Length: 578
Ligand SMILES: Cc1cc2nc3c(=O)[nH]c(=O)nc-3n(C[C@H](O)[C@H](O)[C@H](O)COP(=O)(O)OP(=O)(O)OC[C@H]3O[C@@H](n4cnc5c(N)ncnc54)[C@H](O)[C@@H]3O)c2cc1C
Ligand code: SF4
Image (tube, rainbow, N blue to C red):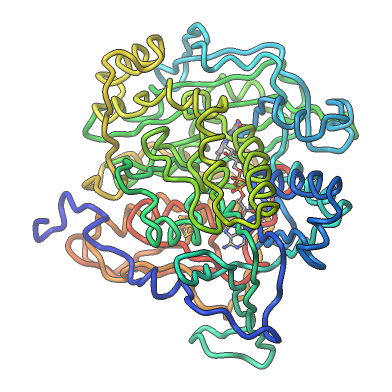
C-alpha cells in the first residue's frame, strides 16, 4: 500500500478478533449449570425453522426417539425478538419445497396467514441505459418466475415458528448463540450470550450470564456469514480446497401503492452503476407486486443489490436504491404511495465452488450459512427450506442409529435439485470480475451451456482483497426529501431497530485506517454506523467513529475487512414485512 493509502485492500486491515479463541469453547459446564436438548438449531430463519418443522414431523411418528431426546427434543435459538425479525429477502419464492414441507396447506392459506402475496403471472427484465430510458430484454431462462409466489420471509418465519411450537419445539428468542462447544473433535452444543454487560464489557446490575446448551446434534442456520458457522468452518477445515465465499448487499423497501403493479420486474447492470472494471460495480434492482389478502391493500417490494467486490469506496447500496426510485420505471409505480418498511441484508454469492463441506461431527450447515443461494435466479428461500428438511432427515436417521455422523446430508444436497442447479451455474459469477462489459457475454455463455463452456473451475476473488479508491459515485446520490427519498437514519428508525445505548460494541474493526477504507465502510453501511470526523485529514490514516447501536446486522462489514459479531439477544431490527 502507498503512504496515501491509495489502492488499499480491506484484507490488509483485519479485524481485531481471535475467532477460534473467542468462539470455540472446549468444555461443557457441569450438568446442573447447563440446559440439555435433543437438537439445537441456531437461527430461527427459514432454513433453521424448516429443519425444526421437519424434525417435529418425524418425531411425531416416533415417540420412542422423541422421548429419548428428553424434555426438549428440538430447540430453536434466535437472536431477534421474534423469529424472522432479522430475516429479509426480495422475495419471489419457488413454492415447491414449502409445499413439500407443509403438504396439506394451500397457497390461499399462506396468503390468509399473511406471509404470501400472490402468484407471479407476468414478468419483465430491463436494461437501464440512463436515468430516463429503459430497454426491455427477453427474460433469461434461469430468471423465469411464472408460477412463483411473492412472500415476506420475516412473516414466513413467524408462521414456521408457530407451527414448530405447536408441534412441541422450544423456540428461544432474544438469545444469541455466541460460542460453539467442541469436545474431542465433535460439536456437543452451543453457548448463549450474556445479557446486561455495560459499554466497557463489565456486568451491570441486571447482568444475566449465558448458558451452555448441550445437544446431540447442532444445526447451524445462522444465515449469511453466520458467526458460529465461520468459526466451525475454520475449526473443522470445511472450506479446504473451496473458493472463498463472497457477498452481495441488498437494501429493500416495502411500499403501499395507489395502483397495483401487475408483474415482477428486474433490472440488470447499466445505470446507475459504473460497470467498468475500474469501479467494478455489479448489481441490479427489482420491484415485485404484493397484494395483501387480509387488507386488500396493494404493496410492492423494491430493492437494490450490489456485489461487495466493488472498488469505488463511495458505493452505497442504500443511496443507489434511492437513486433508482427517481427513474420513470419505478416512479410510475411508487408515485402517490407510502413507504411502510425498510431493511438491508447480505446474501452469499460465491456459488457452487464456494460451498463449504456441509457436515462435521455433531453438526451441519443449512441455508445461507451453507452458501446455498442461486445467484443467477436470485433465489435462496426454497434452497433454505429444502436444505433444512434434508438436514432434519439425516439427523433423525443418525439419532436413531445413535450416531453423530451426518455426512449423508451432504450427499443428499449434492443429489437434490440444489446440488444439480448450483453445479450448472458453477462459473456464472466469476467472469464479472472482468467488469460487466467484458464479463457479461461470458456469463450468458456459461448459462446457455450449463457451465460447460468455457468450462473448468473459475476462481472466486475475495471481496476484501479488492483495492479501494475514492471515486465519485457519491456525487450522483439524490438528496433525501423525507417523503419519497430517505436518508439512512430515518430508514433505520422504521426498521424497528432497538439496541441498548450502553451495550458493548459488537462491531470489530481497526479504528485507525487509511481514508479509503474508512470511506468504504461509511458509504457501504446502510445504517450509518461509521463516521469520519469533519476535521480528519483528507489523506492518510483517519479515526473511524462507530455508532454500533444503529447496526441492522446486515453482515456487509464482514465482507469488507471487519467483523459483525452477535450483539446481546433482542438487539437489532424488528423486520415484519421484509
Ligand atoms: C436482498 C435480498 C434479496 C433476496 N431475494 C430473494 C428472492 O427474491 N427469492 C429468493 O428465493 N431468495 C432471495 N434471497 C435469498 C434468501 O432471502 C435467503 O437465501 C434465505 O432467506 C436464507 O434463509 P436462512 O434461514 O438461511 O437465513 P436467515 O433468514 O438470514 O436466517 C438466519 C437467522 O439466524 C439468526 N442468527 C444468526 N446468528 C445467530 C446467532 N449467533 N444466534 C442466534 N440466532 C442467530 C438470524 O437472526 C436469523 O434469524 C434474497 C436475499 C437478500 C439479502
Ligand atoms: S455496521 Fe451493521 S449495518 Fe453497518 S455494514 Fe456492518 S453489519 Fe451492516
